[in-house]
Image 1: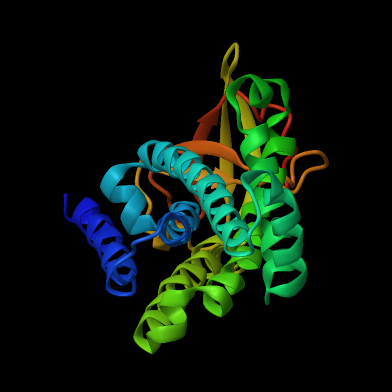
Image 2: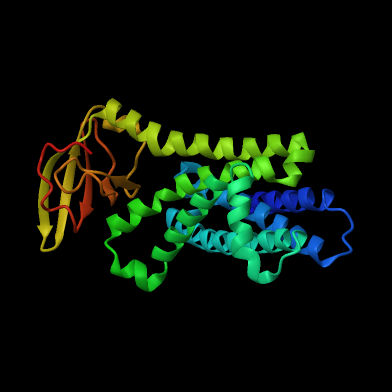
Length: 289
């Protein structure tokens, strides 16, 4: 509940930021542009949450569970793409009306904005990446794709968020008139970026360098069920317990770019820990993970 309240409070702050910078609007064009601004702000806020949900923050996953975080990520992604579509359509329609053009001139107005406004070129590329990611994540399409291929394309979310961030700062009315709002936005994205770097890159590298984990043996317990015995240095200092969930990458040919889910069947001893899986019966001993 406190977590959801924090997310809701952030959403309320975004709404207040928009409301406090939106004067009384008497004409249709102004209303369309104002609607485009709020959908853009909410999309930017949700983008930060989408990336946060990909960061594998231990406190978050322990509190709500990794499966639930994954569901939140998928749901947030759908809302984000919907808001981005609404934002682009409404803003371009509003700008077209300001220029004395009609609804049918949105495409031409979009090209003009991309070519003339700061950072809009990067935003257009980032938006295109978001649409590609959303397309391959549609249920029937995703089920036809190999998981590894879908996953690595999905990682382009980071590039999409980076590319779309800058136009929010340089063209967003809220950030132009309120330095505090700009500081808040930089802080939000900065914290999320730091969490991703720490938990997705630095922590795995640090743990591997510290413990030097490797496959000691692969033992078939029953048909279709194998135990993978992992060896390394000072494994008992990892703080892991039986039943803990891990994602491991094995440095064997054909496996190093895939993340494999495991749960420990026994707490780590000073040199070994055990896990069970249906998948890695062919994992050769000696492969670091």
